[in-house]
Length: 102
Image (cartoon, rainbow, N blue to C red; front, side, top):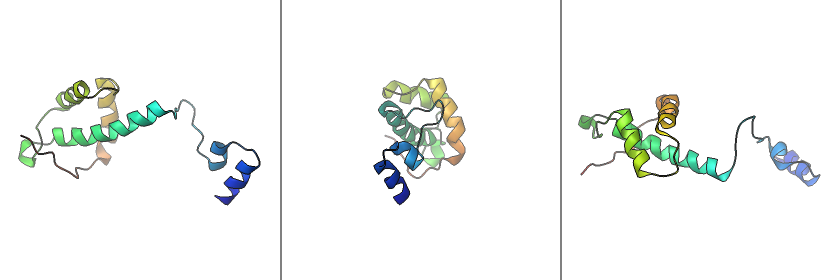
């Protein structure tokens, strides 16, 4: 870290000094960060929504859960994109909380 700070003091690009340059095609703007944060909440909702009712879930299908969250929350990618993202991360998601239904 000290080396990076010296490089920045010498006028080098801070992102290059810390090794956090955006990769080709990667965006690092505020909108992208906001969507990533929202998706973390979406994944938590999906895992609870598709859980069976016997496990205090909602018993919805993946498409029903995504449609419900997409209609309720603005600024998210399309339903097909959310489903694709979910299929990429579903193995790493654990259900650490329960949403109590009415």
